[in-house]
Length: 167
Length: 173
Image 1: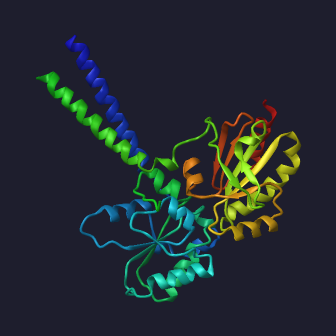
Image 2: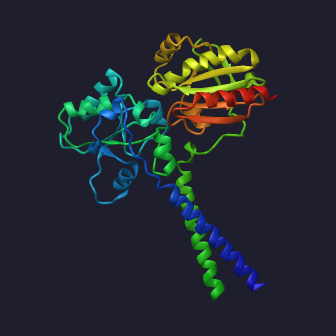
Image 3: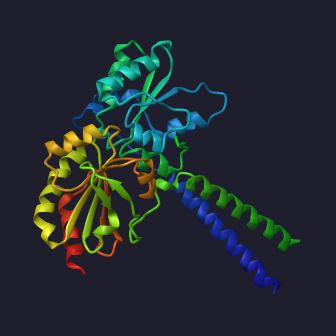
């Protein structure tokens, strides 16, 4: 009887450990930018930040957090966005770039800013290239762009990184 | 004593596993699969202000395509969907577009430009949630004649493979 219970407990612990390990492995997938043409590809590699690095930065206590600006679809922002981020207008639209300009107008040019979109595959994103150029032209010197290979759902949300919703 | 320690170890590990799973589930709306499940029903006015009710298409094969004007891969595949509506409409295909644009005027403009021959409705957060979170486009669901989702396509998709799957679903009753 006692032996059976020990086996049951050991089995439960084993299954739980496997669940933990499997979950951890799922969250460690890496994405590497590919070459090609497209507006987001005009952003220098040195200015990119990977999802795991940004998540680590945001979770690390005591570090200065960058200003997170979503420059894609407002509807997708409402569905899910990185906690603390601000919707700053679609970079592909003139009105969106105006909104971005006014969002950062009063900030120091040295302010750490991270742009992200995640509307569609990286090499097809119409928003990040113009938004990055806008900030560069305005003189911002500490701008990074979150590299989301496929989209926000696949490369951020599905990895279990934190999100919040507007509604 | 050994049994007591093992019990606590098991409970602790189980608790950690549940916590970890919960943290992933916190955002699981984007990963939960709907394939082989009943397609969530919805009713919306389309761009022509006509009532678009998914369940009225029961008996047809539905290609439900989430798109937006800012989504380049969407623009690439939509002419193919127009061609498929022409080619397979008589065999029971109904393409339905859901625009995830913020402004309906943009969707109307694109619909005219691309000469869409199928109904298009505007999407929102609620509809996105129903379909597991539309957090990246394009996203397309292939729904069989019984209202069950047979496939989900996300991102740039091999349209040849999608057509083969579509033909297969069209041929089953």
